Amino acid sequence: MSDLIIDRADNCINLCEVKFYTDEFVISKPYYNELRIKCDLFKTYIKTRNNVFLTMITTYGVTPNTQMLNIVSNTVEMKALFQ
Image 1 (cartoon, one colour):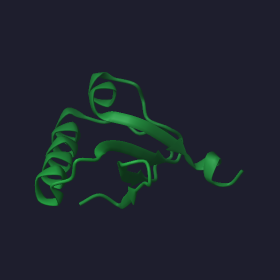
Image 2 (cartoon, rainbow, N blue to C red):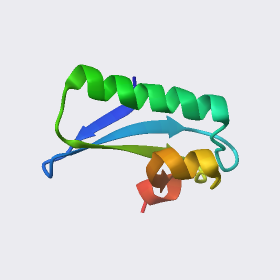
Image 3 (cartoon, rainbow, N blue to C red):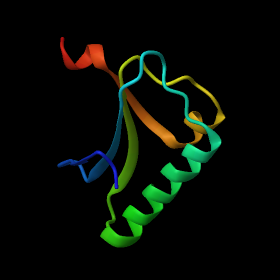
Image 4 (cartoon, one colour):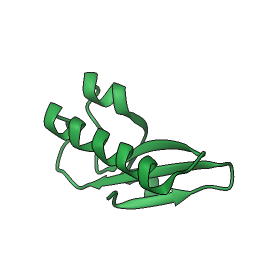
């Protein structure tokens, strides 16, 4: 499952993946498929009507590529956690 699940009062759920890397994180095609399966399984087992968003929490962000743009709704970088 995801590293952190935030069930919000506005009927949205953030599935958060937390990654610590020394550079921008890159979502590869195999990891994209893994994330897609995680999201699908979550929706299937929880049976929620809430919107589900994938959020990446990373050290230095996520490199924009086709996989990232197709699945990630939000990104949070480490610096935002310490402001």
